[in-house]
Image: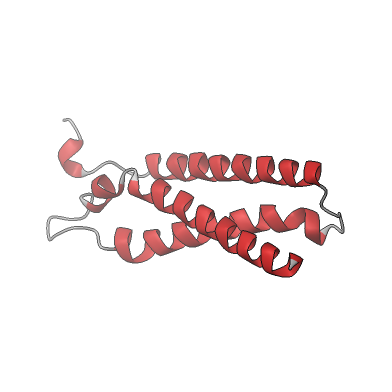
Length: 114
């Protein structure tokens, strides 16, 4: 029973990390897609950035969730609360890092002022 509960929890953690990555990607996706050349939109925003950001969010959440387990620590109720707090902190940190990364990208040519 415990293994199935951990498996379900791990899936939910990966899902939460994926959604954090999706929300981080979606914040300025339209602006980044319009930053392409005059020939059309920049499709790498959809084909490359979206899957990589979602995958990075899921992996970072799973790493933080698995770290105490891999370290050999047994989980008590207090340990589970600490594990949840670390997970939330990691997801917020990931979102902030992704937002900072995307804010550092060049602005579209139409928004630049002479």
